[in-house]
Picture: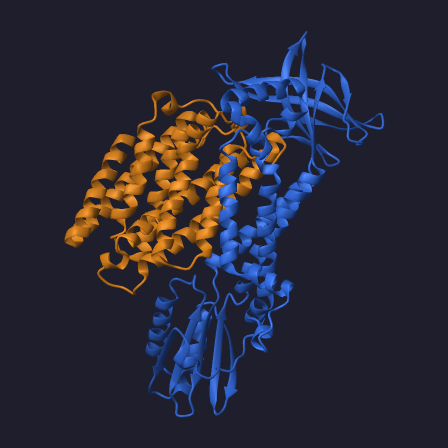
Length: 260
Length: 367
């Protein structure tokens, strides 16, 4: 099911790129249809995994990556429905596929389901990870829109008011940032309940703060093409926090309590 | 706000005023934010010495040797610049303090303007409104007076609070939605300050203490609490495959020689009594029972930090998702109806909504 979803996402991307190139409505509809089917397949795979494991599929880096992809595509489909335009798909789906490729290339032991570790048995953890997924998803869509803005923005849109692309990007950041904040807040509550401290400068916490500060900085800047570049770079920081941090922990020999 | 003293007679502003204006600048806040961001990222590149490791001579020696093996001759230099205690070092906290000061100055500087914008909404249409507003339109016949109830109804259906006022022979209508939303930015900035105050309170008053309790033993908790803890029981639950599902310690808190509280401690579920949280930290088998290591924690900064975080979230949510929008309508003496709309920059769909509103007013049947 996951492999099917992954392949369908690639096909959907090809269709979105084709739609951008030829501007034919059936191609655009096909791209959206493929994305919806792929998203539904991913949803089914996640539900099945959760039922098999007996817990929410949010307990390791592999599961989080799958949920991350799910959230990016879900937020994108909502955007497409409200925006009534499909051009952004060619820019947002590569972002989703970047994370999806990371997920499908994880080693088998990480992909296997396992019982929940005692420390992960907390409702606060579930809220913490779930809110992070939503925030990351929205910021992933913002990055796709930022890419679109940098490569021409409204030039790709056949109609509508000027500034539609930056406005959509702003909206995605404005959706993701409060969720990221909520994720940090609920993480602090969980850490207080699990380890007796709400903040410990753990590398994961530190880089989540870096990510939060980055987007806070972006929100204080005036709208410009440079801001779009910073939104894209912000997603790079976010990906480093999620994917690159284990490398930093290994290289610098840091100690971390975070498994993912 | 810009330098009345310097305009009159070429005198420069007094130093405090100049510092105030400097700190109130958004570009200064952005620069400070960037500096803090860089310092946070930099700190994550070095292993940090925790206070618990520093307090334990054995663990400290191991840590020191690992750091020396990693950084070699650079170790004394890195230690001197505080790289291993980066997040408690003066340069880091100085930059955070400067950012907090800039946030405070910025908040105070904007307070009166934002308050006026949120609380003072004149019903009369100001001069030039219909030329300056980002969204404007003018509707011709039928006479605008007949459309006043329609405009009011359309606005109220869209969640606007509408007030009307006679205006030099004409009628002015003003509709506001989320009129108090501009205050959210102040809530957000004040929440950041409260959060930093909570962190400072934690830093100044928090304590943590590891307590080892033998099976059925009682051990006192220090820091002048007058409390002790007695271990009653310890159980390990397992999944069907034998892996550990959870740990549970049953303890009694003793105060002044009397049992004050009894309860269980699990991972993610501490027992709290009189502001002291008891956490299950480690366990080891000893004879027929278990020797427990509990962690006693007192942190008065936690509640302010969570309250501040919640306020921050509230402010962000209101700022981003409930932006202030206003529509003003004037029926001219000649009967024409003019409409003007303006909104916070985060009301992304307001242009579309304004166009839909105008269309709805135009199509509405007249009584």
